[in-house]
Picture (cartoon, rainbow, N blue to C red):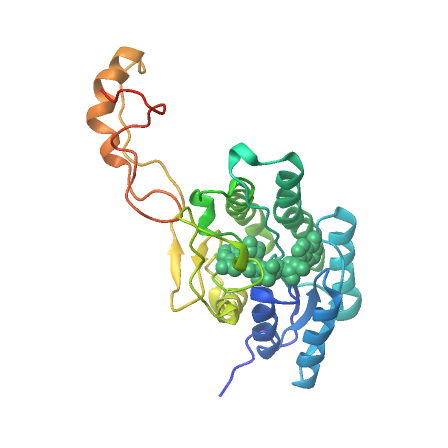
Length: 299
Ligand SMILES: NC(=O)c1ccc[n+]([C@@H]2O[C@H](COP(=O)([O-])OP(=O)(O)OC[C@H]3O[C@@H](n4cnc5c(N)ncnc54)[C@H](O)[C@@H]3O)[C@@H](O)[C@H]2O)c1
């Protein structure tokens, strides 16, 4: 028997007309949430809302551009006007302008940072202010990616996803006193966005059902996850993984502080052995033999 874990809870999902967001919406609605389906792609958002209503759920469309403060605030207002409050916000909207550092333009960099970082900030600030004033607490789910560990060709995207991970940690600390939990997912899905992504060897990502991330979002939104905040989870495919928060590892201490000579003496012996899995690929650190100018003599 299905349990309506989120019955009657107003929820916003940004960038939800297709791809991974569509899966979040379908699962949230099936769990009883009242969903604002936000996307600048109004046609597909309308179709999704019709699908939910046809299945007996409640949903409305918002075509606000979350890459603007005005749009983000109007989106939250739309949820409040139609459903009375906002209890859940899933920051999912995203865009991609993959370039290596050497080829990246200001325009591409700005575009990705605006939608992901500023959009997540604007939507969360507006929703959190409303949640605080309603006094019923709430849940924020951000969307990051393993790309924030570093990924070839993704200067802007990795920066954006790293910023979102860091904001997740900070907001969890700041908002707990208001009963608001803040977590993030790093999803997997074969979507419009993933179809353009390539790894360093030019390979396409493997196929993943984009809808499969929704169950984890519902769980993180429900009261059974009351003790879960400031955490990031890899979702999608067959995995459910905890993304470990970065923290200081092996630490050497020198009385009075480190001078250059002491660093030269101790660093090579103690720290390179700590360089573990590197970048989104998770492969072992690949630069043990050194990084040298082209055609240099590697002594
Ligand atoms: N696909 C993956 O494997 C994968 C992996 C890691 C993270 N992600 C993240 O998951 C999220 C969803 O990605 P997806 O793969 O479903 O991509 P997608 O391109 O299918 O969906 C993104 C949606 O966001 C909408 N959007 C873009 N800018 C917007 C704006 N300013 N206002 C409102 N809507 C806007 C788009 O119209 C689109 O429908 C993104 O944050 C992405 O970075 C995806």
